[in-house]
Length: 235
Ligand SMILES: Nc1ccn([C@@H]2O[C@H](COP(=O)(O)OP(=O)(O)OP(=O)(O)O)[C@@H](O)[C@H]2O)c(=O)n1
Ligand SMILES: C[C@](O)(CO)[C@H](O)COP(=O)(O)O
Image (cartoon, rainbow, N blue to C red):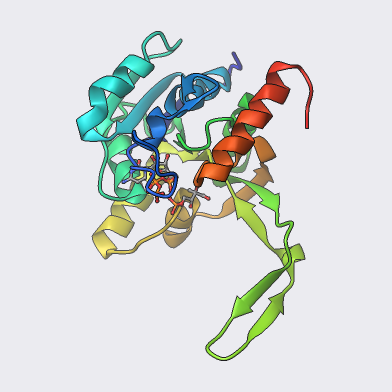
């Protein structure tokens, strides 16, 4: 388990239904190598240095998520999530009893194979930068922006795809999420919330394993990545 100089706490958002995955259970309970996604995500955060975790869960399956998290090596509390990811994060933050200067990480349960080294790197960068921190990857496809009648090439060298965990000081992230809620602003991630209140964003290297399991093909890929990991080989 990686240790940090400052307390590190986390919100794992796991309250989504996973409609695009189309499984018989909410996505966070879908097994990957026999272990629910939410358990893999929480274990990786703990291995990367998170000392206490709040997990937002689908209210009707709270007991199942609690069962899945039985025996995690850090204090974990489950709370019902909100109607959107953004609302779930805000609820999770409000339930974390951490000091204002603690480092807080927000992570998608759907990014179940996040390497603990990336978790640790995000926390370390919050400490050194004083900014919001986001793990990113270069974009590998060519990208076109579409208009009404035509489309145009976008320079992908200037683009990055954004992963989680995203980190900040607790006071920063709480202020950011309270403000966007008050202003009725919708964001897709926590760095965007921080940016809205003027907190700069630092980028660190993400990892292919931290892909968001969104569609059925992603689960097939994740099973293959896990098999490589288990065999001690890297793709
Ligand atoms: N109301 C919501 C919606 C999403 N999430 C969480 O936010 C993460 C990212 O969302 P996504 O992967 O897009 O999950 P879903 O919303 O469940 O997917 P879909 O849009 O396919 O239904 C997931 O870990 C999901 O559980 C959440 O906690 N609360
Ligand atoms: C937070 C996130 O995973 C970063 O890529 C993403 O924005 C979640 O978005 P979604 O709309 O819930 O898929």
